[in-house]
Image 1 (tube, rainbow, N blue to C red):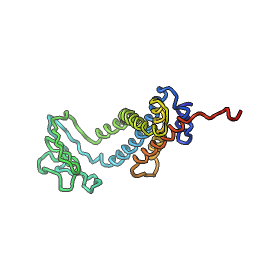
Image 2: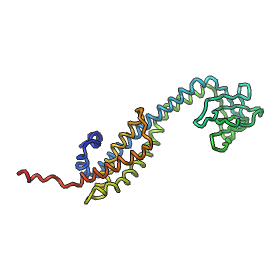
Image 3: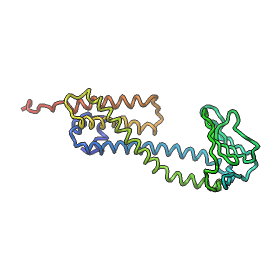
Image 4: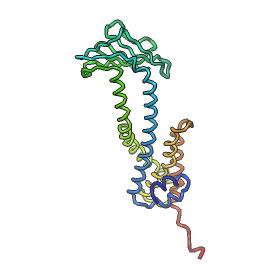
Length: 258
């Protein structure tokens, strides 16, 4: 049975477990890699969709960005200062702002403001419920920042982001799915009587399939399942137990009909 055939059938046909339980372990790892690729691809697409939405939201504001020059750890800007750009509100109702004041006329954020504040020698970042982070401009190379330059940075980032995301998520999912499969081995023991660890691990890997398929498809629908990790875990445990029971069942007695 091919890996793609197993991927399409395992959610509906528990007989697949009986067929794959005694396969070579390297085929199991190839199938695990297939699940990793599926999760990585789906998550990368979803994150890129959100990233492009953020860029579309930001695009109208780019022309309002003044040209900022950093030389020898000091900033200057071709705009009347203090310059304050309000970008909306966060989930907690704080005003998100971008502030430029290299003159020293303004020293801090307002009481309900979060965002970034460019001073002459420092970049100050404030997030809700967090302390101010002060980044000295001496850490930055001499540069000039303006609308066209920012657009170039964004375009370059969007081209590279899928590869960086794919690499990061691929490593994460390889670790996460392997750990999940090892935990599901314990569930598979409930349904098995006499199976080796390699067989139990194979059952556990294939038991991940329905949960991984659901997890990969949900972000592209309008459905929202609260506490989905519980649903994910319950599906994996159920298939591990039922799959191990099917794989460990004695073969049908074909002599009875003779």
